[in-house]
Amino acid sequence: MVSFIWVFLIGIGIIYALISGNISIINESILTNATEALDLILNLLPTIVLWTGILKIAEESGLLDLFAKLLNPILCKLFPDIPKDNKALGYISSNIAANMLGLGSAATPAGLKAMDELQKINPKKDTATNSMITFLILNTAGVTLIPTTILALRVAYKSVNPGEIIIPAIIATTISSISGLTLDYFIRKKKNKWK
Image 1 (cartoon, rainbow, N blue to C red):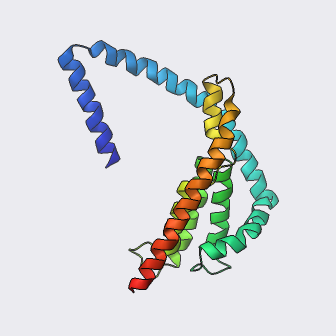
Image 2 (image 1 turned 90 degrees about the vertical axis):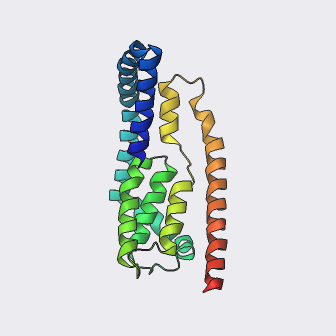
């Protein structure tokens, strides 16, 4: 669906440029923006590779398992439907760790594996479970301690103080996580009353 929206918007832009006689601007934008996009990717790549490597080292050294054990009491409260020895809790912990480092791209594989494990214990395969919904909220609004991608973007665009975003990011993601999980809790409670 999103691809259709993008095609529609690009089509409208091209048609408008043709009608208004500004087709040269489109050609110039295509060439300049492609170069800018490549430069941006090349500037972001080292930071993302570094933090992804650190996450991989943490995973292989057992640090993520330790993190999972530390998070286990909290995760068991947030996800009461998941058995304590289920692999999904480990993948959820990995996903949270990657998101805390601001590595959405590194968090995605763990998130997909967590959803896959949650689907295996799902009694209604065509309906999301409470745990799946809670995980989606936690993944989307998760607390970010080091917004790596934003820092890399700020460095790439020559920000005077790229690190000034860290405290506001922590505050914003903490508030969004608490709000999302609180709303999820009350909706789940209300839903259970209706049954």
